[in-house]
Image 1 (tube, rainbow, N blue to C red):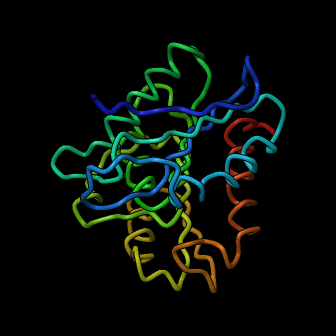
Image 2 (cartoon, rainbow, N blue to C red):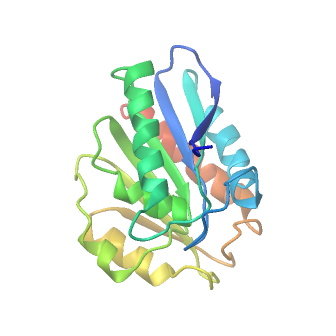
Length: 201
């Protein structure tokens, strides 16, 4: 049986903005990406995004596999699949990407895809070669990282944001799970969605 990505959708049927949640994962794994911890960690961000304002739809993407799996980069292909679905289902509706860890890396890989209106990367997994990724200066970019993160590097996040004209926020006292200051993270996501969906207030 061929593995396929999966979407769980909620919110407005005729949305003003569409938020696509991209969970974390592993560097290498072809195990099925079921509803594990990485997937469940995105649920509060989905609620925060939906509550950001009227007319926000939220899609949670479940990858085919848990791993990034260089050179295949399976979750990047899955994210592009979701963006194609968004363009077909809600043509012209701006898409806001919210990714954690590996999902943040995925979001930055597809940041220049048609329809993407904003990218929010939370504690993203970044490697030095990622700094050469293209970005669109017209697309708002927010990268937030805990200063106690030992899984991914807040320094890489700060350098990426500076190199690409993005906003960087260092969350004091937080690690990779983003649970110690969970209300702070939720506010960051909701505020970013609100800013992108309603740029004029």
